[in-house]
Image 1 (cartoon, rainbow, N blue to C red):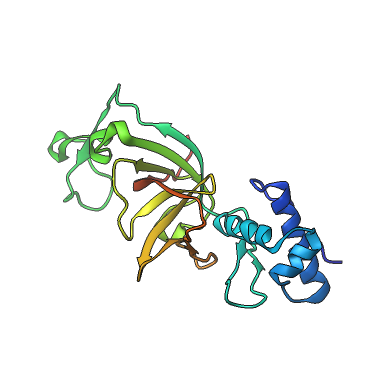
Image 2: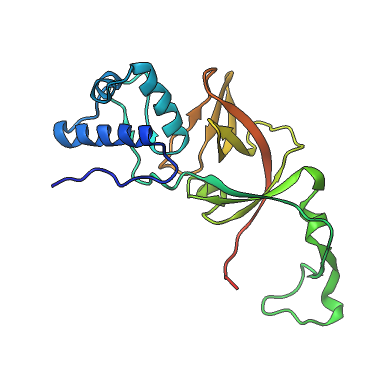
Length: 225
């Protein structure tokens, strides 16, 4: 017996009902429903379904090609869209300089001898250009893995920078923070994931979009303390 999808964290009850309706139609008929068929099964208008589809695409739950019939598709990794789960301001009250070894050290563990130390490096100065406008954010999900951003990474986001084509940005789409690459092509604007399991999101005039900041660096832990 086929089962419907499990509840997905971060979705509204209406969005959960739409997903269940889509899954039920697929299980029964073997093909995706049309937007109107979903609307009929839910007792809502087609315009309402379209609004939910836009938001679910932004959350990495659905794939949909508006000009292609029956193109509604549930993504298997529904909970792995790259979203921001925490935002923290940068603290510049304390600094800590760390020894930086010169780049010509041979392979193997470097000697702690002073001869090998090139300088003292303060990561605040190295990674943060505009402290008052810079924030740490922690992400969840794997839709940006090909850009080197993995689940649990801490990103450094500069809100004073103007986003340029190709930048990785933190965007607010329908009230939710998401991490994607900004892509502009022939007048169209997209939020592009860096994972082939996800589809770029084309920004339309009807969408609620704010470019919150530009990602300048990523911090990845390889060993927990």
